[in-house]
Amino acid sequence: MKYDIIVIGGGHAGIEASLASARMGKKTLLITILAEQIGAASCNPAIGGLGKGHLVKELDALGGQMALATDATGIQFRILNESKGPAVRGTRAQIDMDRYRIFMRNIILNTKNLDVTQEIVEEILTQNGEASGVLTHIQNIYYAKKIIITTGTFLKGLIHVGEFRQSAGRTGEFASNALSDSLKNLGLTLGRLKTGTCPRIDAKSIDFTKMQLQGGDDKPYPLSFRTDKESFNPYQLPCFITYTNTKTHEIISDNFHRAPLFTGQIEGIGPRYCPSIEDKINRFKDKERHHLFVEPQTREATEYYINGLSTSLPPDVQLNLLRTISGLENSNIVRFGYAIEYDYVDPTELMHTLETKKIKGLYCAGQINGTTGYEEAAALGITAGINAVLSIDEKEPLVFRRDEAYIGVLIDDLTTKGTKEPYRMFTSRAEFRLLLREDNADIRLMEYGYKAGLIDEKTFVKLQSKKEQLKTSVEFLENTFFTPSRENTAFLESMEEEAVNDKTSYQKVAARKSFTLEKLDKLSPVFKEYSDEAKEQILIFSKYKNYIQKQEEQVKAMKKMLEVKIPADIDFTKVSGLGNEAAEKLKHFSPPTLFEASEISGITPAAIDALHIYIVMREKSKS
Image 1 (cartoon, rainbow, N blue to C red):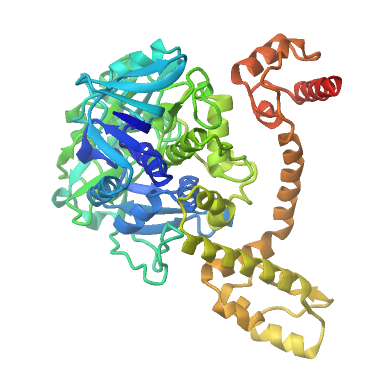
Image 2: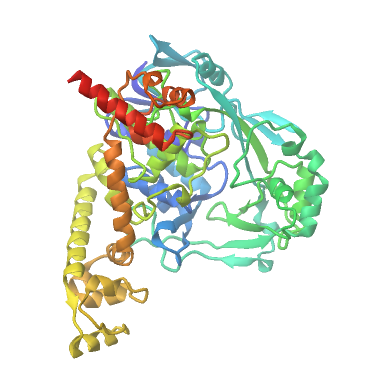
């Protein structure tokens, strides 16, 4: 059979890639090993968080499905870092893992232009150096113009629990072994990574009275810009906090000789920022305890996920260490924790569109790119899906800059710097994070989603109205003033604000730390008609105006550099002032612009200047 686009893998990246492709009008086939596991949350029962929440909001602004699915199946919603600056706040939601999976599978199976088949892809077929189709384990051949690989942890996946090893992409599911060899045969560079998951505990064996309760927000906010905030009232369940202790640590350290992580049984490199409990105990020997978050997996709360206790220790050790923890003394394990190793494609093999440099029409998205996390995977998935469609239609690709999206930071980091460990998004990775806030992701990116046909007219019109509100509000605050008069002093005192001594704009008064949304309503009756969301953005601009403007100036300077394109046929060895190492790196990465070239590790400002001069002189000699 012939398709426009084939997506391999039904995880978070595969879902967003296939939905984007089908919704943009392309005949799409999603090939997955187990159809009922489409959208399965392999590890923690949560979406979003610090840095990750930004990705989910951006994905939603582009027309993705993850935020909507989370709002429909969430069982606790919290804004993390709410007391800190707006740039580092992150929305996180606990999800019902069962309902989330079913919700996503139903969306996939009811989407026009999208077919699903339960098979294992064994080979990528090519013709004249271009992807042309796939061969499956039951010898079916499917042809397509573009192929997107979103295999997660399934490429030669190998599970470890103590000395036990099993070939699997996820516990109880087949690994994809032949496909890994096919990619190597195509000349792609593969590496080996490792991640893991935590034991799940039978709820009736937990004593929650010994733990610290952690509830959701009193006024929960949805993740999706398209969810109606007025009627949003999710059923919320509490999480709980407990801690490891010296006895726990003693049991773990006494069994290091049985830990696959230390015996040499595991070869892959694990995530630095989400280590296993045995790795924590080994690295932080002086720490007396570690946080554990006890999280419900479903609305029925029959099983709990012990966040912070990822492990591949033998089953008897897992049970013994758990029973040293307050509230878990009588715990019974329903599912044991495990580590999993898998192959990934070196992301420097990819262009910013996520198309491979060596095989035209072949894209990679998700954990195969070296990332970890549902959110990173989904963001890469929608990017690959959109770009595959745009390529078929012979339109300009969608490449996000670092100043306009965390997705841009994510892809730029991966494709220019590569990774030797599972990459996780943090707000600290973004140079312009004050511009890349959760609250303005729709303003930054929704127009892209609308142009792609993934955002409907009604939603886009609502966005335009919001943008106009913000524009007129900012102008009003900057151009309206308080003067030191009795009337103004009384007015400010009525709001419990200090009087002004000089002519002062409303914006500067609104910038005060003491100024709130409620006080904004009193400045003008118009604000009372605005949503809290819009008013929050008005206050953020007022309070951070100088910093925002400084970052905007930095962006303008960057854009000038970004406009200078590097000719595809350039011979870097002929650029005077470039060393051999720099020339080799530039040849390997093939950056499209000077800005992307500047992001490559080891490429100095002097090298960029030399390259810039060469390009300018080259163009002049042609004219």
